[in-house]
Image 1: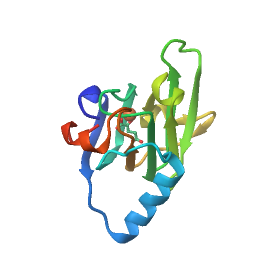
Image 2 (image 1 turned 135 degrees about the vertical axis):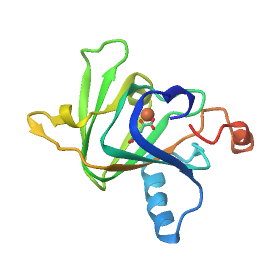
Image 3 (image 1 turned 90 degrees about the horizontal axis):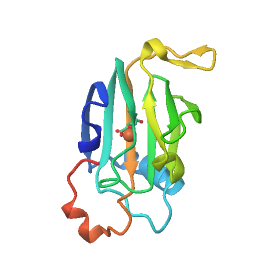
Image 4 (image 1 turned 135 degrees about the horizontal axis):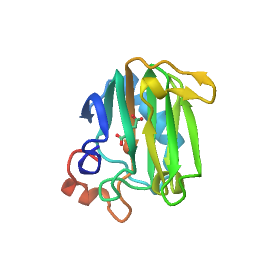
Length: 160
Ligand SMILES: O=C(O)CCC(=O)C(=O)O
Ligand SMILES: [Fe+2]
C-alpha cells in the first residue's frame, strides 16, 4: 500500500481505520499481542483491504519508509495463497494458505528479504490443491519504522 505499492494491487478497494467497535477492538488486541513485541509501536490506523474475486497482489516488499519490521494480517471471507520469494535468491520461496480467520505474521527476514504476493484465481494453488478465490478482506496491522516513536508518527502519511 502507499507509495511503494502503486500498481501492485489489482481489483481492490481499501481504507485506513482507526476507530473500531468494542468487539473488533478485542480482536485487534489479540492480533497485536500475538504479533508485536512490547518495544514496537503500531501505526495508528489499521489497513483494511477488500480484494474482489478476480483481484490479486503482485510481489512487493512493503516500503521501509512507512512500515517497520512486522506486518500482521487477518484474512476474512475467501481463502487465498500468499507466496513469499527471496528477493536475492528467487529459488528460495514458500507459500502460505491463508484460511479465513487466520493470522499471518511477516517479521524481520520474512518482511525484509522476501517479497509477498496474493495469487490470482487462475494461479491459486496450494501445492496440488486448488484454492478457488472469492472476495477476500484483509485487516493489516503494521509496526512503525524503527526509531520512529509515536510522537513522530504525525509526520507519516496515513497509509503505510
Ligand atoms: O492483503 C494482505 O494480506 C496483504 C496486503 C499487502 O501486501 C499490502 O497491503 O502491502
Ligand atoms: Fe504488502
